[in-house]
Length: 514
Image 1: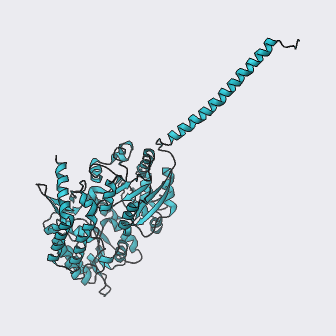
Image 2: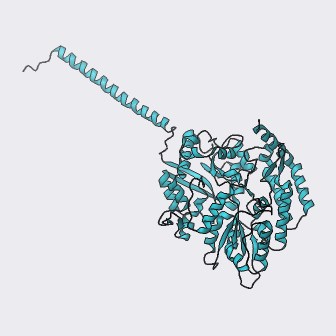
Image 3: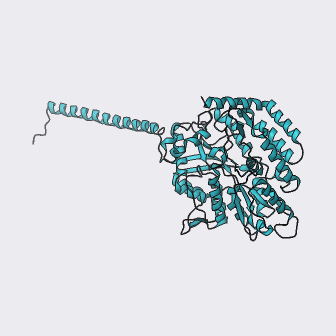
């Protein structure tokens, strides 16, 4: 074989090397450009909503129990929702101060539980644009799209929905009464305000626990005019819920009505005679429940708490029997009960300072949507089947280990975005009856007409002005002022900004009728 190369062969080899080199350069460049393209796609993708992506976020939430929950149920929720949650728990007793402070300072979380929608600071923060408007996104999610239009409207401010509404039953108010004390004293379950007063008297004066001591009272109460007995008693008297609107569109605040004054006089009579706990004005909800559980009183306002009251009473009250009561009339046979927020318990809101992109918002909304799935609902309601609860042959729900349930599960129950999506049959007949009565309340619930309306003055001064009426109401109940003094407080409310609030609500209401 001739190994000698020609010049033509050498030139061909050189050309081949040049082409090969060029191809190599092009390949490197293509790889580089592809990598850059992938990086660009990755950057672009980070702004794209991925419902299955790992979610790490913070949640400023309200705690309605004495202690935060353990990690047991939290880890189950995180596993189901593919998330990592950092909770910042705010005790219910201090929520007003803590939440308003957080709003003022801007020290918020990715998701914020806002339950005080009538609070002027909260309302002003919502209207200021601090939070995302989520209205247009809800229909993109399987559970959120089922939120009824009337609930969305009630949760909105001037048509803008600044968070996912907590869906509650329309009206949950009612009483829990010691049935065993009624039986011992030969009394029936009250159906009128006069009968209720007699029960409160008997529970105070007739030794209902049979221990021979003067150590019981009728009503146990707490320092919250809205969630104490007063608001519920007020609705029994026929007081409007927040505001009265007549056929001409004229607005009158509830505390400027005869029915409100009747409630004040009724509550004062209870207090004066010792049928209402003397320390109610300085008592927190947890202490109120403990007093009832310890057998110091026989009437508790808060029908939905009946199961918790029984749990707290275990080992303290022998022969305890409780009965939930939802229908008390003022004697005319008609029933009224106030509705809290027209079925809206607050909002799960998303601050723009923390949730900076639409993609982040959509992923958080997916998390909220997941919380409404039945699996997560059961985690937040009952816990883990076989560990915390069981279902009997009739499908009735029963807690197996109360102490464990309280530690692991109970703090989450008030964080469920919806209480109405599923109805569990409770194995506890007291609780099951209370649940049925809550649903029955919707037939005679009294709505607050201002829930979907807005008032600039109420946003700016509402909470401060409300204290004028709250203080005057407490003073009247405790005998520190009279009817004239209370009416003077109402006039002070009007002069200090209340009259403007009234006019603004009337104008907003008129605009809805156009």
